[in-house]
Length: 206
Length: 343
Image (cartoon, rainbow over all chains, first blue to last red; front, top):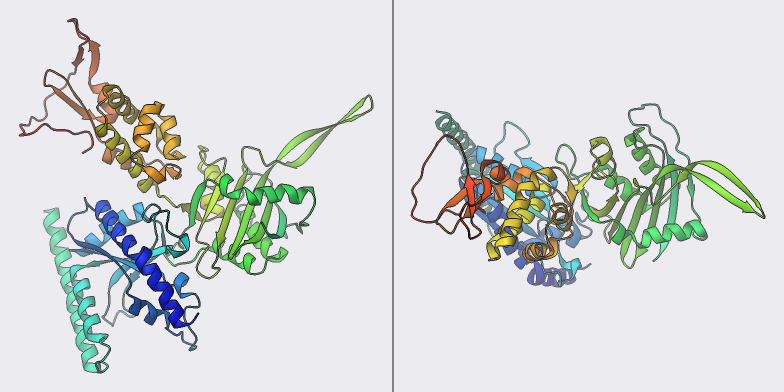
């Protein structure tokens, strides 16, 4: 499929399904997590056309297209995010999510070496539950899955700033010192999460 | 309908046996009486397979499932060799209790979709009676495979994408509510490495919230008390697998009460799920009765009838007298009427 046809197809899906589905998921997640303490926010939104097309055009290590069927294979066309205060809140949110949704993938996303710092977060690929999209909509337009990220406030803050600084289309690529500075802030966020969680646990157990 | 390939295998109970053996299998012709029976199974799979299932992630959370891999492998090249891998998987999960079975793997295409139906006929014994003029010969038959036996199982998958699809499907398992976990888990949990698409908590929550809203919505005191009584009985459903309609029947609800509950649910009525008592009680933890003299009686729903003893009032007029006995452990004042049912 050429990219202009893919854009037409994705735009049609976005307008007809992904927006309403994201709203419905956000409401459902908020309802399911109502009794879980210290949730800062719950959001769900569809992937923009630009980001979808950029991802669809990605190449693998052999230089071939990573996605042969992007509309079927890209699983984060709707992305949801739950932000909690402390690391232990990530666990309690995860337990609630596992109760209500069927996961086909669960990942603790961490840097690939203990000597590195960068992105931290818990990611799920979950089956889109029935009943969130009108039955009148063509089933072929409805994605099978959505992505859910669960993070602490610090993890979220770091990933937002990192995305803003590191992925600006017009700016020059980051230098080694810039990357080291980003890793340093990730390490600080990691440490702050540990400290807050330890304090929270010790105060709860007092 | 476009059945393209059918393969069949005799699957022995060999769970826990390390020694390998080659499973006997055959290609079934796409004509004749057997093909007619299998076509019917293939065609009616959507209606017959009434449980919506989804493959599980791997034990480590990776997006991979061994049974799904075998099904996709078969669909990519439906041969006896590839079908046998499914039979080998089933054999390695089959205990003596599940017994000998005849496995059919039926593949076809439906428009742009690939479709596969995996069906297991359990073994049985039978007597063959043949009448010849005035004589009757009877013969004992072993290894008869019966579709209508109480342990028939099947699963059906249909999807357009072999790369990203085939994560969800439908199944039938007539032994899904067997009290022996080994039996009830054999087909969906063990062989298909799948779970219900609607999780226990999600399905139970929909049911509980619908019951709660139905009780709130009606002004009919008989339906209110019928629903409240059903909530008290619900603990007995712990672990059972059924649909909302099935659970309503198990709770002996009247048509009026069912109608009221169903109106709160819409399209989830046929969803199969396993009843989760803990989840249910989180949404319907307390039962309250309000009397016309201003009294409100509240107790945990499952224990309400134990805690409050109900008699006819001594005075005329159809009144009810409640009695209870215990030690006071708390006392509250509030600014509004406390409605615990549904909190």
